[in-house]
Length: 211
Image (cartoon, rainbow, N blue to C red; front, side, top):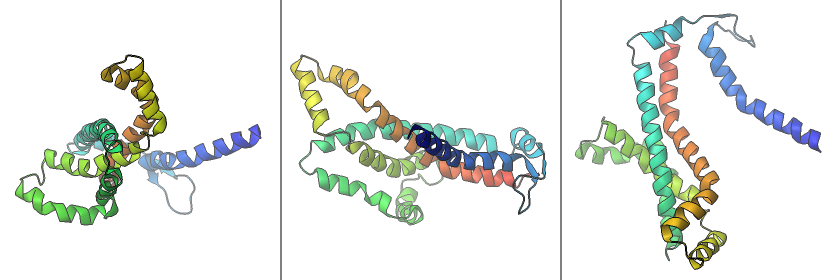
């Protein structure tokens, strides 16, 4: 049984790493035609051009990274607190249902629907507009993801901590946070990955056309 688990784990890791291996090979490939399994030749000229020339790739990547970090931290932190409030609300199901609306529509359609209001507020094409637009999707997603944390066991844990004399702050940081850490990390990386996905794709497409 242990051998089967090892084989399955190795197979899963291999499948997970294949896209990254492909990106690494494609990044250095000079000639790579079907049906070749690996590139025929390699060069680093495009990497040199991407890192040295004033083409905006590096600046755009760094800016996207900063935006993604902010969106992930904000969504995870506030999503955790808002999900706690929703869990104690009598209209919990209705509030959670409302969180699905930004996620139910296609991102393109959703962007077209809110773009009018972004133009009125002067947010179109601005850094604040990009962050706000991403938060409109990332925050509801974080709330839905973290909502499952607030179950009966957590409620009992809070009651025991309060009965033992711990303050609300002590209960939050010394009791709830250590227990919630794995789920918070999952939420952080999920929102960070969704925020960085499109900028990485655009940067990759621009890199591919460098000479």
